[in-house]
Image 1 (cartoon, one colour):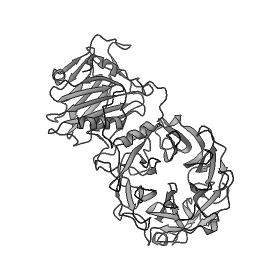
Image 2: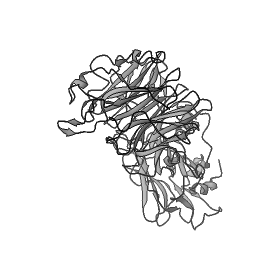
Image 3: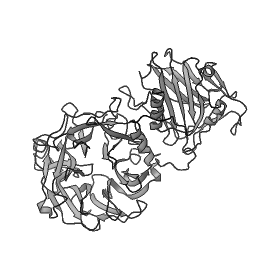
Image 4: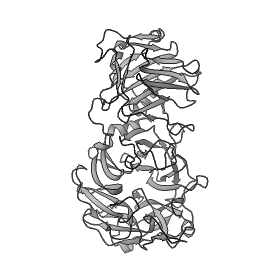
Length: 598
């Protein structure tokens, strides 16, 4: 047993990743690509000479207004600096939007995009937003994006969605958010058709070329619109909003598609015949069977060079365009021909919570295979940035599917596995230096970064409201407590002398029959309180939109009682471990898996 008197160290919330002055997840620390009145979908390819080429949609005004066009920018120093944007289509022409780059085997770069070639600007005599109307086109570059070819149009097959739209098929309504991927010996990209202007009756379609990596004459490229038949990928019971379909090819050869809905969940479909037909869409799930929550935001998926997968989403069930901050990543692996997804981590967060500039989405991912590093790009609609992501974070996501060899030790400041000590009901802290003031400082809300984790195994006898599992509060209420509450839930309170910030586990996750493993993670970077119960990150279930909570930027000073005592529920708290940092969710899952197999 570790010397539990070192418990006092947990109450210093300016710790470790935790004492770093910067947090890689903080959106402002990314390298700027470009800022404008509007910029979106910064998608990247790495050229043969290691230059990074980014294509994006931009304009001096807001999204969907005049002057919207596509452009490219280059970086020779791995994203630190970028060239002045190079127009692929001019801002003076018809709207050109949603460029997606593809690098061929022989070095040519294509950019696929929507172009309002018929210059449709009205519907029923009224002016309309027109950046999703018209043709699918492409241009290509032989010199790494410095110059671009003439425009070429792709023959997108007219289907029932087009014939039923407001223009009776004379104009198609469509856009794409992914990036073309290699499929067999060819290339495929996903896009969404709308059956009604604007943003209604969405369904997924795919464009396939089997000779783009060998045929250099653009007039001789083969194009096929998939799936076969009149209807795209959609579920008849999932509503009108089924859009932003993107794909990758599994190691098994099957195709996998992810897209967004207004259900509050991410939706998936499979094809085992190269896109000709697709399975009835269903909800993507974690390995524990719970569906992955995603709002009406880009559900971006990638296949990495290690043949494993990543999913970018926002981990809540909102049915609107708001709350795209923070962004989360889940790791995926193939099992029995299907994808199973890990518990997620926050990958990026911002301190701007506003709808106008605090949201971010439409990311892309690139790898430096030579040194095993990753970068994620994103846009807040007014500024695009690129962010290095530590490989260990992604390895942690994928590692959730493996049996851990040991528990996490980094940052561990207290470990009590002896139930006889816990059964005394009070852990006495004395003889150690007090930090700054009378009483121990738990949280200094203005500290950069930092965090703490309380990990317990427990077996509550009942869930009557207010039964204290753990309590460090002073006589005036300052401190941290954990108590039973609600429907088989426990609640944490982080309190100063004026108010408490509280958050509970999801309803029904605990019971009085089984022993449970619970981790409370307080992360002072994104200002989040998270619960991991029996290896599952609380996501709100069907009872609430969020399973995690962001607390105020300035929570203030929280102190323990002057006696420096922690009260513990005898015979119900079976073990207690405390870290002076916010564990990654993957680390909490790993500790649970180790505990489960102890």
